[in-house]
Image (cartoon, rainbow, N blue to C red; front, side, top):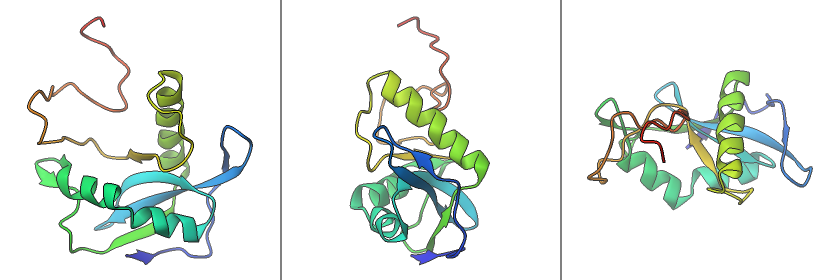
Length: 136
């Protein structure tokens, strides 16, 4: 894992108790894959090394391929304004729905993902889509 753009800082966002956080992105093969918040570069590197995140990157798929092959470098960088907006929108939706009340360790995928280990995957499932087609 390596860090890109070390002197560049993204626009900080505030967490629920008013602390500034920076949104970071895990980038694989030149493509931003997952965004997450951290207070600083050291915390971001630690989150990037998190086993749960690494497992998700190997298991979850985009366009029929794993997000990460377990070998390619994962680069850490600050999020672009568009990536920060995706993270904020997803974070707000999760908190409002009661799915996530934890302020730390949440990552948001920036690409559509499929979990092949779930038998009941619906092709219309999209983590950024709030359209509830089944009426629940």
